[in-house]
Image (tube, rainbow, N blue to C red; front, side, top):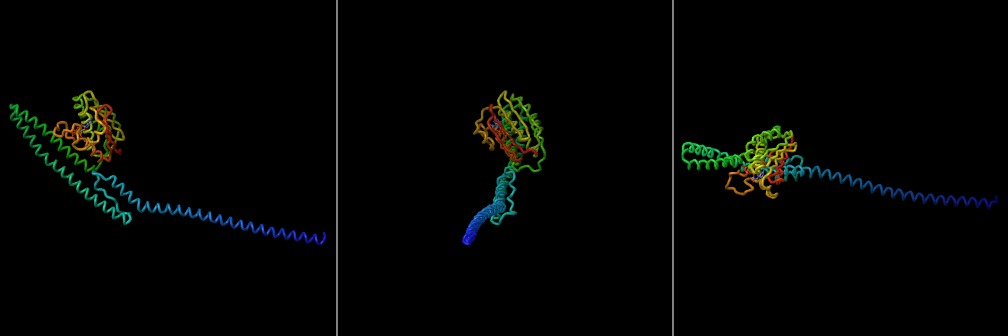
Length: 333
Ligand SMILES: Nc1ncnc2c1ncn2[C@@H]1O[C@H](COP(=O)(O)OP(=O)(O)OP(=O)(O)O)[C@@H](O)[C@H]1O
Ligand SMILES: [Mg+2]
């Protein structure tokens, strides 16, 4: 190879080195750009993760510190009724700002409970006080009827007075039961609802026969924690109504399941909008308050109050064949 050729080759090598160096430089630049982009993307992702974590953290703090005490407050207020006016919103664990609100609400509940208890005690005492003069009146009428048994006018008057006396005593007794059940149940015991319904139906067999109404029973074993006397009263009121407001040849069906009790009867047609008011005291389908021969209008209010005292629910609607369909939901034990 000539010298010129050899030098030419060396220059070519040098060019190659320079080109290589340029390529190397370019790839370095690319790699730097790549790392810069990767770093930025990583940073953005890390920021996003940090934001999500922060969001969760804030949510947890807000839930625990602010919302939890508010939710407790809400559940206490939602479940507060005549039967448990003694319960209060707990103040422990709430932030200072909420403690003030809680104390104010508890103060208000104190005043409501005091006023409600005053009214309830007044009704109970008044009813109690009226019992004695009514019993004395009845005794006097009965004695007069016996001593004047030959006098038809006295006999007629005596019978009328005894009927008025009887309905007044039933009214007083109803008001006492209402005041009693409004206080709630203290010392609940397991009650076999099927057995209770069976004995109530037995008790009303004669009345049903007199009204020519047949009694049907579908009783499954069911145990409810409660006051047996109040629960018996509740069943008694429902069955009595179902027979009393029935039609000749009609029927009454009492079903007990683990969900509660259903009393369904035939009778005269009731419109859907007429049903709810019947559960208010002194409300009757035939709005005649002066004639109390049929009843005082307290039976269904007592049913509602006793059910509430047992943390149950009342659902009533017109029956398919007239009459009423009443479903009492009771929490089983
Ligand atoms: N099972 C039923 N079928 C048809 N109507 C009913 C039934 N139960 C109640 N009613 C209607 O609802 C009204 C209110 O019933 P509730 O038991 O409260 O009072 P009452 O039976 O009139 O009097 P009390 O029960 O105090 O002796 C009744 O007067 C009656 O018109
Ligand atoms: Mg009744």
